[in-house]
Amino acid sequence: MIRIINNQRGVTLIETVAAAAIIAIIMVTILGALLYGQKMIVFTDTKNNAGADGQELVDNIMSSLTKGVLPNAEALDAADVINGSNFFYDSSKPKQYWYEPVDINGKSVALSSAKGYQVHVRVYYNNGESYIELEAFTKKHGTGDLI
Image: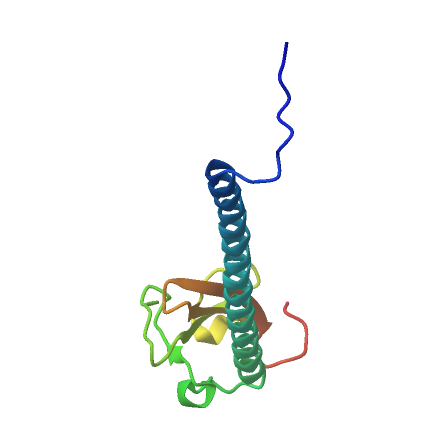
């Protein structure tokens, strides 16, 4: 026969330790997920800000080129690099750009025969570990047909 113990009012040490361990594991998991989520929110915000800065730089360069004025690196608060091969992270100038005269097919040509400009922008963020690259085309001297 099975004997039933009538006195079951207490909790054993093993039960207490096991319950505390389970609660600790759950809390560490939840806290880790919350911290990871916060990190991703900050990272995404930084990336979005870099994208907005890059788009603003592209717009300013395109505006200058459309008016027939060559962009001024100091006024744009960005570094003008040559042929894009010199893109590198510089903490003082994390925004960099270059542009090239192109024909109607997008091939590089001399400035005199260009129909427009291909604009390249790179904006670094996350202490230079990441960047956003944007490209755009603008017509030479504003409105009018490209042909």
